[in-house]
Length: 331
Length: 199
Image 1: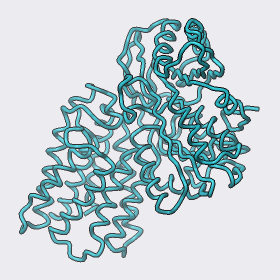
Image 2: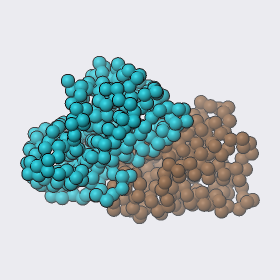
Image 3: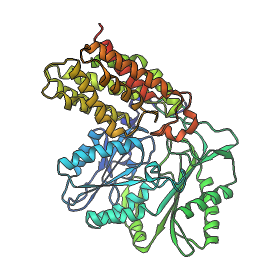
Image 4: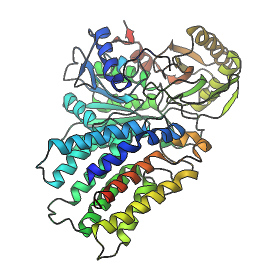
């Protein structure tokens, strides 16, 4: 395994130390596993909380900051943090305005979140949970419980974060987030595997001439491997599925994100985006917001997640509202 | 009893990780090591704690070890056991059985998996059945022996199953031929419980 690490046992602790050094103006690490805003938000506003394993940097903690997350609870590499730290974060953020708790659908995260929610309820902490599950790889008829939450959480943090920052109440922030949540879709593609930094194991196998559409962000199997397609053909196949998944029609406005998995160049992502726009132009679907970046990576995995969401003027205003986090800033 | 389970896991953690490489991301062994260390530290730090509080603290400590779904599941097992022994002073075979059954019940609520889904429950539920079916007059050692055997057989049976839960679920047929590491961990824990009464 060729990585710049020390003893794998200290991975998360050391990466968080480095994160705090790099972005101490915006975030701080508290209680070893909580990434919090350096300057907390006013208590009169709804707070945003999330949890997730490390190893996906800059996600999730890179999005703590003004106009986005208030606290990110960090677990071990690719492993959800336990209920105790989540409850600690809820107690820290406890306020009359309430907390919006964004959870990505993965078994460990959901278990931990549910247990923390139970305990929070007993303590009278006002918190509403929203579960993201926008992965369309398992197929159109798959129930929500079986769909993973992928990069869609990041634009959701931005949109809900803007709503919270503007002073909207918890019910309204939740309603806006849920609306966005129910009209977004992600599909991933993998070209080359990554190694798990703790174990040194390769996450999955792919032949030199193969790619796999639908792979999860810990190497979970997708729809099966296929021969490598051109960028245009890959873009076409993926955006067709995605547009269909959110029922995007002629005249609709959408957000498109190409999220690099860590081992794919921006060069490739720009070429793919060009292919995506061609298909959407043909369909008369308008891209009103886009982003090409590494937001939620999978170590050095080659591949990307393609994301689409239906937009309206209100959502666009929230997406464009000011935010200041280490890896997403809007002026 | 618990320290014996800790020892069993310690001895076998590499096997657990190897199984998890085939069915997940390869970290189950190290996760269990952390969970068991948390349990051991809790026991060391609370020498005079009454049993029910100790079991609760162990459960909470395991959950603090940040082990994905392993933490909440195993932690619930100990918390469930803690609830069952509140006020119990005599740990005869009936009390021990009740304790473990309660722990399994709390864990099952989090897990929602059944036998055949290729999870920890494939070892846990048969162990519970063995405890329920045990002779009224059997000793603690005897019932734990039967539970350990049932758990071990249950874990073995997971070898050719497809996974219905967790990360392994997304691997389809690739997990066939490999036992579920979580079920092996549960089996080792029961082995540890039994062995603590034979030394």
